[in-house]
Amino acid sequence: MTDDHQHDDTWHLAPELPRPVIMDQFWADAVFLHWRVEAEAVARFMPPGVVPDEVDGSSWVGLIGFRMLGAGLGQGLPVPYFGSFTEINVRLYSRGPDGTRGVVFVTLDASRLAVVLAARTGGIPYVWSRCSPVTRGGGDRREYGYDVVRFRRQATSRFVVRPDTARTADDTVSLELTARFGLHSTLAGRTLYIPNTHTPWPLHPATLTDFDDGLLGAAGIRVEGPPSSVLFSPGVQTQFGKPRVVRESPGQKD
Image (cartoon, rainbow, N blue to C red):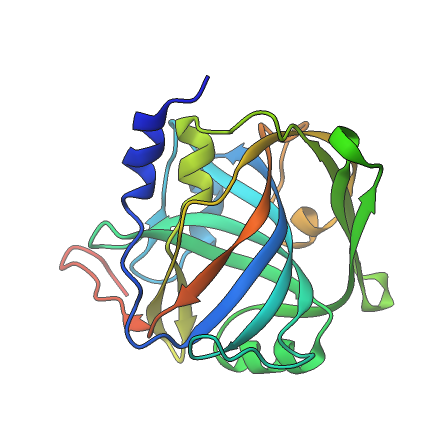
């Protein structure tokens, strides 16, 4: 049963279109796997001034795969070839000193070397890997997933889900883990917050049908058992705004 009130309470937090728009992109066939973790276990990954956010009484780690389509600078100016690729990321959930909620990327695997190199100069921890989407079946048994093989097989991952597109995932945990409108990162010793926004995306519960992951372990994060949350979205258009420096509160140390 859909709880529209819950849905609206989460999505109204989406900020207006940032000005200026520095990047525009479409995320397609997004698969979200999430595990509960102790905040103390992931605090070391947070940039200075940022702490782990908690949802439903715990912090979370996500393994997320999607197809990036038509990414480009500004708004509506996709970059041919380099703007479309497959990405798989390991991410945590963060809260800044002003209460702003975001994500912290531990690793991001992508197959476009130019993208990886450019992102790393901006402090985003991309890894050059062979990343491929996986689709199989058809109709209401259609499955979506991703394969990752890092060069020299330093780590690999494969995860596939079967979404239940007849149902909507509108519970509080699902929405708060996927409706995140910015990221915290570190560049040249400074903590930055990069805002982004998008309209509510179709979000469906899913069943994990294939799973063999080494990315979480390679990132230094241990999880127990299967993911607590498995979700799928066909995608959404999103825009990123200009980064801003995060100012620590007086009680926080560098």
